[in-house]
Structure formats: structure tokens, C-alpha cells
Image (cartoon, rainbow, N blue to C red; front, side, top):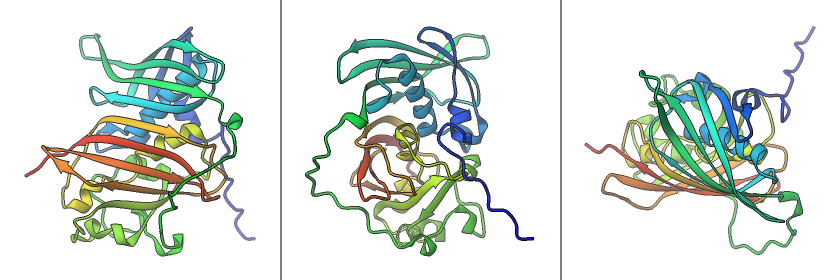
Length: 283
């Protein structure tokens, strides 16, 4: 008999949902065990962490959808227990604003703040349909002509547990770094989804903007590129199907670079944008 087709995970019932789920200890305070399944090298991925904080704020605020989220990454997070503390700063009719901090404990049992977030939430379904834009979806070859970590004969530098949880198919034009011939252009483009087939939603977009290999790789720079600050704008609820992500860097100076990301859905809508400042280790 032919093998049964794998079951596609649904929103609310996937590994991403389980690993970002929090337990409310008291109003505004949440406990979570950060999964080691979302690590890059030894640190927990910043997009996964942003989704954790985003889920906490969705519970704490009167609105459920992130519109703009700005995060400062203070210290590297590690898999294991963490606490998220939130506060409501403003509650309006169409937008509410809150802040959240994720904390872990050091060897002496003292709290160490890992991330601090300021965010505004609203209702994406209440937005008007009027769109006026000059932005265009990224030109990426069909998925069958793109390549992911599983296609590499050797481990891709910097890849680790998180790659097993993502569906990433990179545009060959941005894969020179993996072949030892980086293009020198700060560009990365890919098809993107969750490996278990769960469709994207506003919270998973917070992961998507920080999920591709660093653009620094195509600039000929290897190693960890830790995020200092990341701001995400969620523009629309994504349609079902794979996403397309384009990330560009125009300026590296003083050991820091910016990454500008656009996320497009299967209906050719720009559903999220982000900019982050990241540190690079030169030499």
C-alpha cells in the first residue's frame, strides 16, 4: 500500500505553537521553558524569542495582532526556564501598547534580562483593503530550483537545530557563501515555511524575519551575527502557503550592519517588514 501523506500541522497545533506556549503565573507574568529546538550554534534564535514575547503580549493586551514590535537583545538566551513579564502602557480603541521582558537566571539564581520589547497591537482583520505601493515581490526561482540545508553535502556554517524546524529554500543567486564563493552582495532570498507545514500567521511572521542565514555570509564574513535591535512591522494576515523572504544589507561599518527584510505571502502581498542592527566579528 502507498504510504499515507504526512499530516500538515495547523495553526495552534504545531511544534512552533507548543514551543512558544507560555503558562500564566499571574496577570502579566508568564513562565516558559525555551526549547533547544530553535538554537543557532549555542544561542536561541532571536525570531523564536520574539514570537514568545509576542505571544505573551497578545495575551496581556486587549488586541491580539502585533502591528509593530521593537526588541533590544541584551544578553544571549539559553534553552531552559525563563519568565516573561509584561505591562500594559496604553489601551485604545484600535491600538494598544505594551512592553515585555524575558528573563532567565544565572548560576547564583539572579535574574538576568535577555530581551526587552515595546510593541503596539491591533486587529489586522479590521484594516481597510486599500493598498498603494511601489514594492514588488522578490524575484525568486521556483522552489524546485532553490536549495535548503538538507541539500548541502556538508553542514552549512552556523546551522543547527533550528534548520530541522524550518522549510527554507534559498535562491541559488544568494548561495555563493555555501560554495566558498560569496558574491560580495548583502542579499539573501528564500522560500520559507515551517517544516511541519503549519501556515503562517502574524506571530510566526516574527520568527520569519530572522530565520534566513545572515547576509554577512554573502559579504564573505563567517560566524555568529548576533542581533542588537530588531523592529518588525506586521502589515497583513498572511494567506495560506509558503512565504517569500528577501533580506538586504547596504552598509557594514564599525562592526555593525543592518538587515532589511520583506516577507511576501502566496497572494503577492507584503505581509511583514523588518530592520535589524547586528554585530559582526571582522578579521
